[in-house]
Image (cartoon, rainbow, N blue to C red; front, side):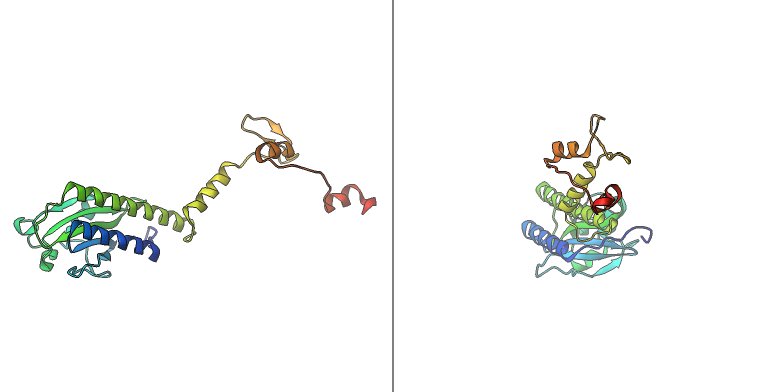
Length: 228
């Protein structure tokens, strides 16, 4: 982890994610919808649905590797995990979440732009639950939205501009796209067809600017010293 940039999620993004898990919990009618984050060697609850019977709180953490947690499998495989009823499943009946009466689980991995696991988006229920295809699609939409947020955060931090908005980058990209070759001697500009034109000609045709001529103080001193 130390070899990679650590993503810092802003409070504004956390607030948006909180709304997503609250909506998810209400729509699925389950007590726990969570966003888990890998904080090697642990995994922690980053965002938890604000439901009365939810036993998970932001900041709760467990050892990730070898823990037997549902989310450990999602992180390791990078794939969806569905456990309809852990008590009826020999592999899952003794996992740590069962102690909290969370016997069904559906989770998806959240991946960072550089390919590392960020964590999981998951739902848990105290009753057996198959979770419908509609619920899976909804969770995938929410997961994709979170990954798009992470991509923007990653780019911002990589460039050292944590407060930039997408529109700021679009403006910079547009500026780069409009860079043109300028002759180092006469300052003529080469257009896209490879033809060279005086700078006045280029700017008037491409940017609608008008021109008038004058002489700057430096050139006046050099060219017309008698008129200083």
